[in-house]
Image 1 (cartoon, rainbow, N blue to C red):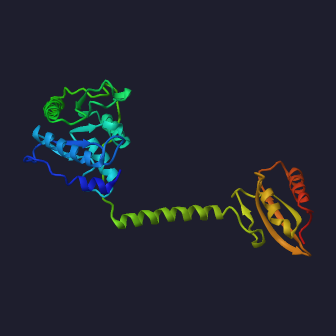
Image 2 (image 1 turned 90 degrees about the horizontal axis):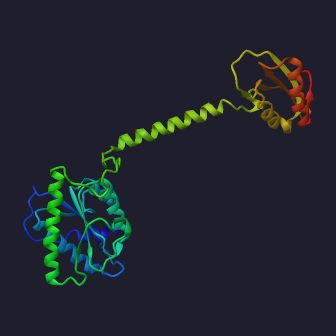
Image 3 (image 1 turned 60 degrees about the horizontal axis):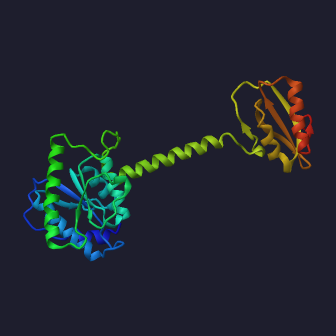
Length: 299
């Protein structure tokens, strides 16, 4: 949707005095060149439709008009909130069809118009459309404006008397009314700070699970009482890999460096809740052997 074009066209004047008490009739229509019509054509149609709407006792307002900065927000809010809306589906403009679909979901009074040369899509073919002459001849347009005015008034009165039957009939559509609220800069900053703090706490928590083995606290998984230790020697280059695999054992709680000598690192593997000393010695010894190490006494 072209915001600049729509903003320029929304300044088009309508004849007749518009009273504030008159109900608003929204207008959904193309605003730029379509398959068979120019932008100038649509500017003329907009002016004529606004005049017809005012003559029928309503206040004409394009659905893209409003005070919010985001045009998409204005359009959606107006589509769902306006008491009655008119949609011109001539040439089946994609934006118009999308906006019409949203409006039909609101189950509020909607009037569809098109030229006599238009092809009405199958999905809405049973929706009564008010047609106007494709050549826009004067007599045909005068008759169209009268019929359009009656339809607008009839549908609006039906809504007021709660007898209006929408296009969707008894189909239930759960639609939340669009709402907007202002958020102060301070609120945004505080929200961002809370999010950053939460992320930092998560990083800190994870960092406690992994320690550098050379700093004497390779990893710590459990606070359960220790029930045994196994000492191994591993080449210094393989310490990290050994520690990673050893810590994958559920029983292992801590792997820490005890000493180093000639490129070999003496590690103490503390465990709890295992199947006993013999079983744990074998498990840890096998892992040490995979990385060029072996079980040993501390040195």
